[in-house]
Length: 268
Image (cartoon, rainbow, N blue to C red; front, side):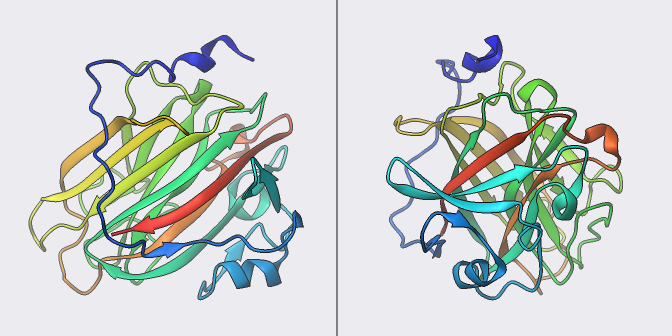
């Protein structure tokens, strides 16, 4: 195991810690049904109903495994490729329109994971268009909030919002001492609150911790975002995307790499 893997584990005493989840019922809990093995389109449709498209499932990049008695999705990132279709996987799962939503899941990066320049991790989104991949948010067409791993296991939130600095979104770096570890279960929580139209009061908060421990470290907090200029849309989808990239093959992995995702849920 690489020497930087333990950087995340000792949470700084001064770090902001996550509050407990609210008492409301979960909006969505992805069941991940059936035996371990290949995860074809039919199984995917059963677990993720209502999605309009998918990448990486029919290509065979996704499988269902069991660890510690619980099902997980394993995504195998393809050597020399980038993007959800050629390298990883991606889809947009409808959860109903919300003003606030909290996504939670576990992620475990395999030993020897090839971080390269970076790649995407699941988040939340909303609006009539898929606002990502260089399609900027203009206040009326939607928004997206995903996470990224970066070089050497660093992390950031990757946002598309009305005031993003360029067409490829906005990046909110995790603390300098943060590194995603390999071979360790992490708990990820992202909470998004929509802004009032034409006001910069939208919120994103992200916490990450070691699965099984009580407290998570807050790694991102912004409360001045303008996700939208109209009330026509809110948070409406779990944006399950994970892949290397980046816009060119300099982001592509050069060795076998995988990650596992489990306990996927959206809360009020």
